[in-house]
Length: 582
Ligand SMILES: *[C@@H]1O[C@H](CO)[C@@H](O)[C@H](O)[C@H]1NC(C)=O
Ligand SMILES: *[C@@H]1O[C@H](CO)[C@@H](O)[C@H](O)[C@H]1NC(C)=O
Ligand SMILES: *[C@@H]1O[C@H](CO)[C@@H](O)[C@H](O)[C@H]1NC(C)=O
Ligand SMILES: *[C@@H]1O[C@H](CO)[C@@H](O)[C@H](O)[C@H]1NC(C)=O
Ligand SMILES: *[C@@H]1O[C@H](CO)[C@@H](O)[C@H](O)[C@H]1NC(C)=O
Ligand SMILES: *[C@@H]1O[C@H](CO)[C@@H](O)[C@H](O)[C@H]1NC(C)=O
Ligand SMILES: *[C@@H]1O[C@H](CO)[C@@H](O)[C@H](O)[C@H]1NC(C)=O
Ligand SMILES: *[C@@H]1O[C@H](CO)[C@@H](O)[C@H](O)[C@H]1NC(C)=O
Ligand SMILES: *[C@@H]1O[C@H](CO)[C@@H](O)[C@H](O)[C@H]1NC(C)=O
Ligand SMILES: [Cu+2]
Image (cartoon, rainbow, N blue to C red; front, side, top):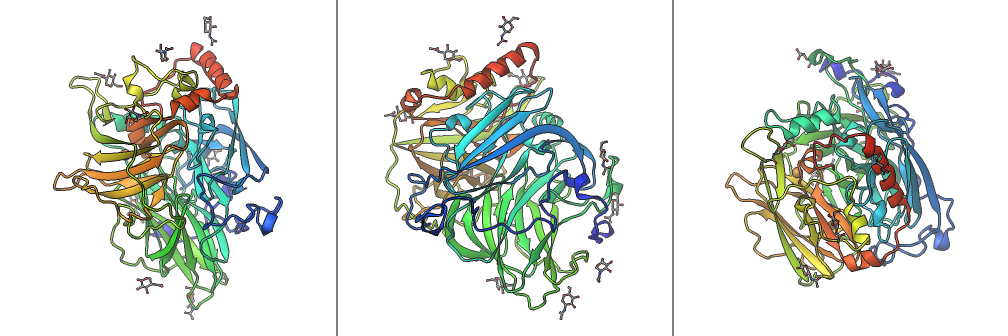
């Protein structure tokens, strides 16, 4: 592959990634925590440890505010050498890293400088207790931010570890609106150097609207054009007629010999499942999503969209000039170019040289690691029988036999479609939880139930990374066929916020996952597939949790003002909402 043998990049960082420095040698390691906090007992979070704190009940409160200003605007960049129109946060791709300590307050003012569409940013994985209205989901927790308008999101860094933010407005994040979040906290394993976020994302050379349109229309499916690591890749320009530069440049990382490095892997793509590895090195997984786990060692990690794994890698090659390929490969995904590459240099290596390491033989893995190997560090013990159980059946098909036809996903026979002008949470706050004319809002009202179990069957022959907002669910079981009632790691089941739901298998047995949550967070919580095209096609339900408490809560004026601004905008501009809205 002569077009990628040269690691002296042909394009400057600003032409490939705008104002981002992610993936360059200028991007230094992260400190163990931000030091401008008071440090009771030596840490911003005081005496709390991974062992002694139920993170869902008693996160620390530091009182320290981390302010950010994010301006959303259009630009042109060439992350893999193909120059395209994108939508960026502060002109950077990936967007700026949000960094905070556990217990800090994150405050992000989002200015929408797009002239013709709304936006809304979701802070993936936070619980948003008592700040449900800042969860960033249009048609659910807010109206979109109208062109020219701003919204300040204020919420607590209530969990710690690695995550990301992204636009939740249609598939807008596939245009570039996403970035990493690093929340420093106590650790469950020792390491020396925090190399920070490693964003893994499939990449497309077309605008997101036309991709959504194609994906919902019967005919050839959308395939990704490339696979990027920290927003960088290379492309064979002979195979495109678009403006293209060969050898745009790959991301580079430096390993210090003998030291153990932390990498914060995030699948921030639109469709593809990533299988990540580093030649010549094993990976020790210490956290999945925002949940520290008993460390376990693997050759590769599989991440569905939205999932994160924090991995430790020890630089144990006895050659300070060594260089290796970091690989992330799209597996069981729709793509024309599955291979993501970055270079890992030991600290005396020539950082312009091309690694010569060969890929180890690793079996393809499209599902998450077995639940038997993923044990949370902080145990909650066996989960009691839930107060209520809800089954969801996921199907796919055309919405009509005569044109115009859309290919849609359904949960229990209903394909979600939201109304940007009528967010369910704000109606619920006003005491309205019934929408007789809107079955397609897919609201499941769980009333005052104290816990809920979701048994989800997938009758579609591909996986869905299922994400729930506002919670880390217990994953009680995963498999194919009919759930037999058994629970894996019953005394300490895996928790996380996205779990890959297997596809229906060759024997026509549906995939299933069994999830359980405690109803400790009143709100309207999206439960959906994180594949951008699937949620656009309606693979989504609203979990309405403790509506009486939502109605009792006093919401600030901010989300209502955002709706007034959006109403004024949509009074004169018709929104071409071709999808679910999310
Ligand atoms: C680049 O693409 C062209 C056209 O598809 C192909 O002929 C060529 O072999 C490719 N080059 C490399 C190095 O893969
Ligand atoms: C991409 O296009 C923009 C706008 O036309 C231009 O400013 C920029 O230089 C181009 N980048 C490359 C790498 O050609
Ligand atoms: C990685 O783990 C495998 C399986 O445990 C082991 O055989 C191999 O030697 C390890 N490789 C390295 C580089 O530590
Ligand atoms: C160390 O690695 C470099 C880069 O791959 C290689 O050129 C060199 O021969 C290696 N040295 C030894 C002693 O193996
Ligand atoms: C580093 O590698 C580049 C690319 O192969 C080469 O051009 C350069 O001469 C090398 N530098 C040194 C000091 O070896
Ligand atoms: C199916 O979806 C298309 C595209 O959204 C829409 O125009 C059409 O009215 C829908 N058909 C039915 C029967 O709902
Ligand atoms: C609740 O909201 C829905 C949707 O806006 C509306 O149709 C319905 O009339 C409202 N119900 C009440 C009692 O206000
Ligand atoms: C519990 O949830 C079910 C729906 O699964 C609902 O029918 C029932 O009314 C709820 N119970 C309470 C006490 O809210
Ligand atoms: C929408 O337009 C109508 C008619 O011009 C006007 O009466 C109404 O106040 C407008 N609503 C908003 C929210 O701007
Ligand atoms: Cu899906």
